[in-house]
Length: 439
Image 1 (tube, one colour):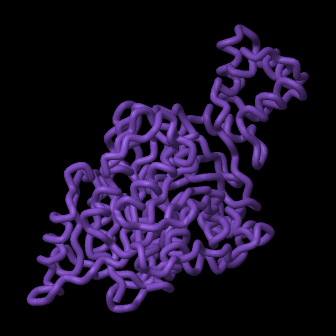
Image 2 (cartoon, rainbow, N blue to C red):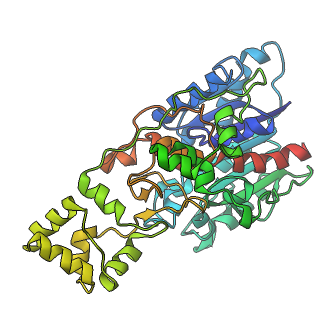
Image 3 (spheres, helix red, strand yellow):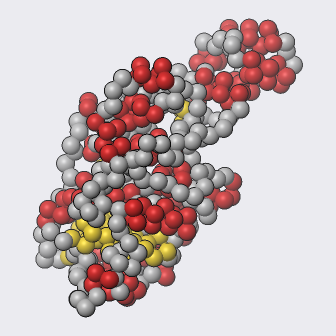
């Protein structure tokens, strides 16, 4: 039996991969109460019962200690009257907002130092193997005046990977060279690059990183992943005349329960509600060609023009804002050569919006799905569609608020965020399976 701990577990992407690979999760932790509801519900579904054979602790990593973790494990019913086992693997993905290249990077963001707390917990628990996962920006994030748990003061400008490897070496761990892995290489229908660090106690056998199992020319596409979830029956039958193997596996379940059986999805698809949008937004979505971004659409409108006939809500809005008749609006945009301001009245200033391509893997699934447009319908994606792109089973139910906005995004972890923050289960499985080999 191989035993694992999952810290910063989120909704449970890594945990799904651990279970699929053959690990028993004895302890897991996250700071969010919204995440806890989803995580514990899934684990109960799989036969992982709190206090019996697993323990989830809602905690800030800065307050979590190795002693606390060992106490929780020792109280599990399965170990009553027995010596608790060594932990074979600890995996974790410290919050990465400060490292992200997708938005403003903040060297002073306190979340940047959580990887140091992760190292501290490793030093206290002393698992045989450790994995740390993060965004690509983790590679070149620099620190000023950073002092590790070992007391070493690092030179200003030291980058995170160098600090991490030095700290792990000081507490008795050798490390592999960090490596960026693309989820699409491991059967996930999504282009998602993440950096992985693997460490192992000195004297143990070094594992390897997983070799890609899918060639780029055979990457799973968005159609392969969610073509069966298109709401328009005619379009669905055209795109997905029969279920793909990925869709079948998603429905039948990849993650085994404690009795060895996978959980088959219910007949009614869960988490598949669509966001309500206005007719103006719906018509605006219809202007995008498949694979086109907002900035490219704006260039097309300015350079080549666009036909707005059949878009009454957009025509009326532009007519009111530009002080023109509706016929004048149609002619203005049809001939091209509009100003930046006129293009932005039609399309808004937002450039990051994109209509995904059905014949390509999805782009990286983020925590806010407002800016992704379905290739087949003029709408954004459901939580279930995003979860499919991450390789979650359909039986995995995301609980709590579906989405949130404004300043609440700093503290709330609704369903879309739970999906977007997760490590794709199939990617996690590929990584931890290599560790199981050397165990």
